[in-house]
Length: 204
Image 1 (tube, helix red, strand yellow):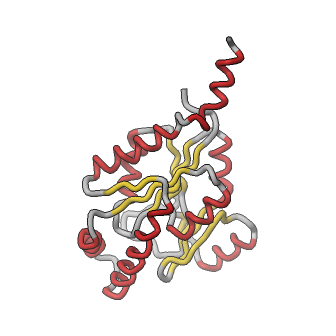
Image 2 (cartoon, rainbow, N blue to C red; image 1 turned 90 degrees about the vertical axis):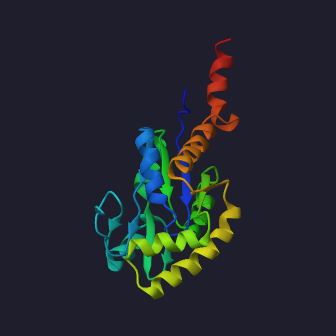
Image 3 (tube, rainbow, N blue to C red; image 1 turned 180 degrees about the vertical axis):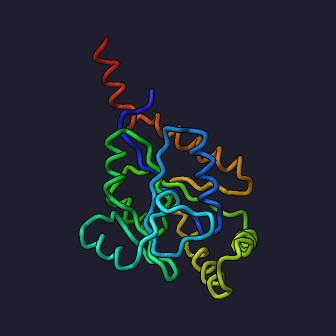
């Protein structure tokens, strides 16, 4: 029996490591998982859908949402801003859902302060060369942008020590299964099963 309380999962990793693909796979395997959609001021890429991949908004709209207290966290990443809308996350957690939040390293630290029980998973590339090859294959950034992303990636990987689990994405199926196994296992820790244990004892 799944714990009735919701669980927040922080899912991070450098740009190009395959976070979106891994998330798509695990969401297709477990319909109980809820993916949180982030806000961003960057331009929409080919094939992306507003409201599904991101909420694509202007910097002015983003600033207004911050003033209105509608953003849980936000961070500058390159020249663009990313953030998490607060209301949906809190609503899903109250409904008992497992909410997966794809988030940058800086934002994850802020979330941990607000949700200390959150589970955190860092997706690691097999090597920096593999990561660079993946970014270049996207053909969506200039050479300067690529170099900047690689430098940011190095700093983010150093922060993987802050996470509960680290999964290497050298094989999509294996990495996806490992992430899903971690999430499922954490639903049955003593801390999350205390209410069920109390229920069992009362019926003795």
